[in-house]
Image 1 (cartoon, rainbow, N blue to C red):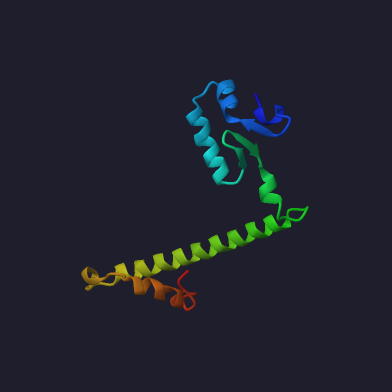
Image 2: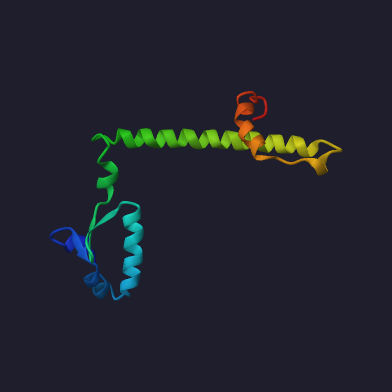
Length: 127
């Protein structure tokens, strides 16, 4: 049973849903809390929710969805930058491990990690 499609108002009474689906009311509330947290549903009253679905995601987009595409492109770029930084750090760690002698005294402080962004600009040969 698709409770949202059979609802004239697009709202669902959670008590009714629990009865129709033969599940504990607590399970329904667990699920709706997650869906509300990610913006797919909204509470209309204590026991009534309404589906928002893609409407909330698409509301700021142009009709062709270009702002979503742009955001996705930006996120992919950011992931690529993190991947490159991770690669660079792996190379540095590998070089440090290969240094004979002072291996027991090697460590990385918080300041070293902060300074890593400076070296990222100067380490094209590492990755």
